[in-house]
Length: 331
Image (cartoon, rainbow, N blue to C red; front, top):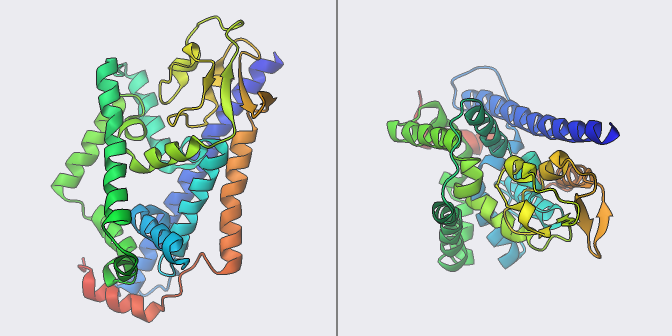
């Protein structure tokens, strides 16, 4: 009975953590929307810019990372975006791809669409050849961005882009893009949603280039899921619940780049001790270490960044106001 209750609690806890991060991201978007209205003279109510909105600027964060490792200079235009990017890298370096499995709001929405697809009986398991082909998409996208930023742009070009007016108001441009979407964008968004109802965890499994990067980083993680082949009953519950459909029932250990560290497989396994989280030396550790460690480490980056001046940017409000009114369409 204790084992069943523990399973139920871990599964519900994951949903709770994902919901909290998603709700907070929505709150950040709400605050930024009011800041945008104020700074573009569409509202008389003064508002402050939430730095967390920079988490939605992954390309800018990647450019900031290139500048950091090539010059040692921390991005002062979107420092929070770079901090979030570094936090995600470190979380996945230690706790596998736990940023995707526990924190990322896009991953959470993808999970919800997957659940809806199952309830509507729309889910379809693609043949192996198609699954492998689709998996390559995110790595192709990742290779494109890495080649463009790390091999085609030198430090001077990266710095010029980071300081450019375009990057300065990239967050507002993104907001306007969502507030007034084009027909093409709506079609793409609808297509992704439809695909997520049919193909399990479509965005994370096949499309997200940052998920591909974090998966490669997670290969260095010291922890892994191990399976006791002697006690495994081959029920495949682990495979059915895995967001990436990893054939866990056929492996002695799960350490590949697709494992999201969600711990769902250890939660649903009906045999106590068959699937466990292991540290180096095959030492068993609690599955709770992944969510606890990932969230604490991620939030720790925010605390340190805020305390050391690497969270809020130092761009004067009047400068932002000038560029907002100059470069953004007023609706």
